[in-house]
Amino acid sequence: MTKWDAKYYTEIARAGYFGADVAADGNVNEVTMAFFPGFPLVIKVGSFFVANEAAVAIVFNFFFTFLMAVGVMAIAQRMGAGFKARLVAAIAVSSAPMSIVFAMPYTEALFGALVMWMLVALLDEKWWLAGLFGFALSAVRLTSIDVLVVFALIVLCKAVREWKAWLSLIFAAIPLGAYLTWANSYLGQAGGYFGIQEKHWNSHFDFGAATLKWIWSTLLTSDNVGYLLSALVIVGAPILLLLGWRRLPAPVWLFAAALIANVLFSDGIMHSRPRLLLPAAVLFIPWAIKLADSASTRSTAALCGAYVLFGAWFSAHMLAVFEWAI
Image (cartoon, rainbow, N blue to C red; front, side):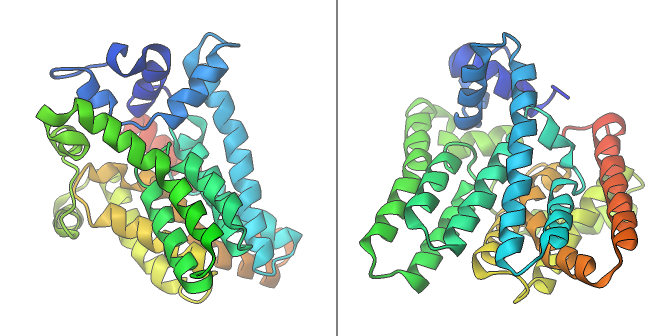
């Protein structure tokens, strides 16, 4: 529960980017600066009250997961869903395959909560509120750029003449630009922020060439269950995206599209894709609503239970059986 990226987040919270006790080939900040400061800052604040950074992160993430689920229910409500359908939608997103990371010292729960409520703000056209959520988001992960792009598109389509909307968008992007500028000031010799991403994680944009090659190779030759599960998610995400067209509000669908494109059009650690694609579980919302509205309560509960069990098995296998990082 506290290995891989969790180690980096808790160590950055404990000792900062330059003092973290993590494995590094060279200067430690060449690996620690790949991680944005928002989540370590949250852990640091909590550690003033509880000395164990990992425990603090896990407790916070249970709270963030709850907020994320409520945010999903708010999105479903704006799609006309009743309480039962809203509850099923929340289960569909919060129990998706690889959802174990919501309970680990990872950024997924915080990122998911902020994304859901930013999407709610965009649906309600509350630009300042969207800007506040975006500001927090862009301090958490690089993939915040996906929802910032959606913010810009919505403003272009619905509020192109409203200066408050544009100012909110600029405000939302400040932490992202500020952190990358600061990190690059220390990482010049290593190729900058994106240079260390490529050096240590082989992460770079290639229009999906590496993803297609890996999927082809895995499906034809691999018998590793973890690889096959990862391939299933990678193939399933764009299919769900196509099926979700016109079934989701524009900001929600566009966010899922931007996230999927960002993840799949880049090279990197392929078996981390189920985790990175978790926010795209919003694509399950219309199907969750349809299930709740068309099936009996007993049938809905049974299907939700089976879904939760599958997600738990998927998570357990990737965490406890699969030998590589998630």
